[in-house]
Length: 506
Image (cartoon, rainbow, N blue to C red; front, side, top):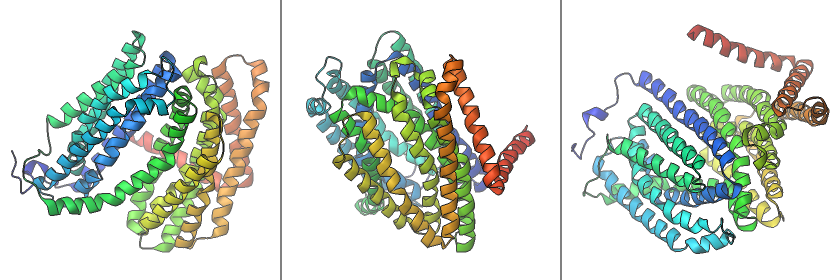
């Protein structure tokens, strides 16, 4: 085993750190985008084979068990990545404490699985599988918890290629097994086979070539330092979890597992698009800001351009998909999931706002004001929690609308904070946001108006979607050219630049 007091030669930083970093970014994007797209495709196939209740049971179990590593890991992974000259033995105590806390939490979950089932209203024959499913699925967390530390060291040593290949292998093999067993009639337990296969592959992949191995030497002072570093990270995770997942707990407890299955499927496209589109622009902004963060005026100029780009290019994509959600959801999931578009539409409209609002965090962080990001996050969580608990909503559709409205009402605060921090023109910022809202709103309403007209002439669902989508795009382009030609030119230059890059690479 390697010397416990110093990193091994194999894990020393490369000579060309910049080239290595670029490679790391590429593989990190492959891991993020590739795995999510693959997971989304698999979920479409499984949704066509399984019932909403089966989906609800599997997703409710994942929601509950996902809380265990969030607490037990305590931000140690981030501390491992951040700490320079970290000695291998300094990770032993965080590792053992995470495993012990995780075991205790899992024991509580298993012991109270019947009460959890009662909380979810599991009285029917299908719903009765929840307690058994949670108990069996808990074993996957035992594989996941130790692997989190190995994954942190892989990231610390910038071995993103291996992580990306591992994630793709887990999703591909696990997903194929789930689809195969679902076709064979395994029903709900197809999900169980998927998560166990993925967990085993992940653990074997990382631990077969470990970047770190535990030993019996413990270091309490280092453990306390890493705990202090991880505490605010865990706090932020709790805040995010409460603000975004409370609606899911309320749907499970008040409406039922079948309704939660509808919500889980209806939110898939929203979450996928938010991750892919939002992260693309967010990463570009961070790379630019790292060079000019000291210059408030330049940062302000970049901010206005970024907000213009996200509000006039990214947001319309969300609104377009929201407008076409009846056609898209029927095409993807079939008649079994009729009504899921009522959930997807407001969530996608919320995504059009969030893909713009999310950029505020990058600029505040670049200016050295992460505390302001936390304030906006806590405010949004409080408004969401209060709204969901106080506003009566008896259906999953109404509860989704309440969630969307409370999230949207908290958005102006983050824009006000950025406006004051960067001292930019409030008029320019407001007009950019209002203009994008009006343009997208007009195009959305056009699709709603044309839908019954198109349906009378075209009977094929996918053709209806193509016609309505073309009408949306044509309307948006025409309105943008008429009312703001410079922004239309900016969007054109962006697309043309991307095409030129692809031709140059080819």
